Length: 333
Image (cartoon, rainbow, N blue to C red):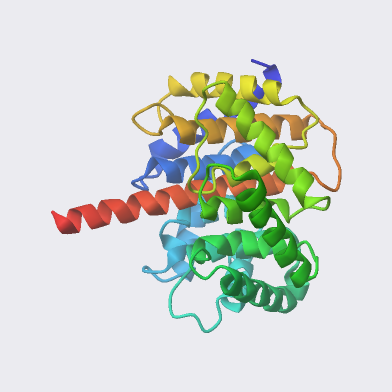
């Protein structure tokens, strides 16, 4: 394993271990989500600052708020990386309220979107971004009412940050969707077509060429008899790996190597993650190592920051689905 990847993976493992000792969130994926935040920043977990941030969060949000639910681990981790965590939380809440205005329910995915706006230093035009988000999401719902849901919110906010015209974003997403469905006919679900369109529309470049790159990478995994996930936007996450300047076989080899390494580590083994989930986090570590090493960058390349947000979002999505399934099961029993 390349040293740059191993150091990144070992940092993720250490961060998750430290989090597990101090924070009992109930679900391992919340520890992984928080560990990803610190690892993406190339930082080791600061337990004492995290504890302070958790108290700040409790003081400033309601006990039944989504800020203290599935999103808590990511929020306090993001706060702990800031010089003024309380102000950062206030900024997140302010942006979130603008994005979720008039909604009857909290949207934990939209909290991630609010964080993205704050971290992009776009507080100064939060009102404009909120209006763009609402316009974009409304048009997404009109195009695909049965596919578009709250779990598209975070990516929709990221798309508003591109400053592309909303209609251009919709056109690019639709071009991706129809190309995969009608011409490529790839054996994944319609949700996955839409999710990939959201990821690929984040960057410039010909949408069909980007789709082809994703398909080629997916097929490289398939030809090696490695089952890449098709749920929770796992498939869409491949869009973050297509312009690293590295041959697909190298990406696959290194991803598998990291996944096998993680399989024997507590918190990442078979009791905690399935093979597809482990592959996803392994691939994110591989991609991040190339981004840090200064791999070929272009306007069609997704930044390491956005790629890590996608990994955090997928972890949140998996956690929410697991929590919901567990609650439903206990109710039935």
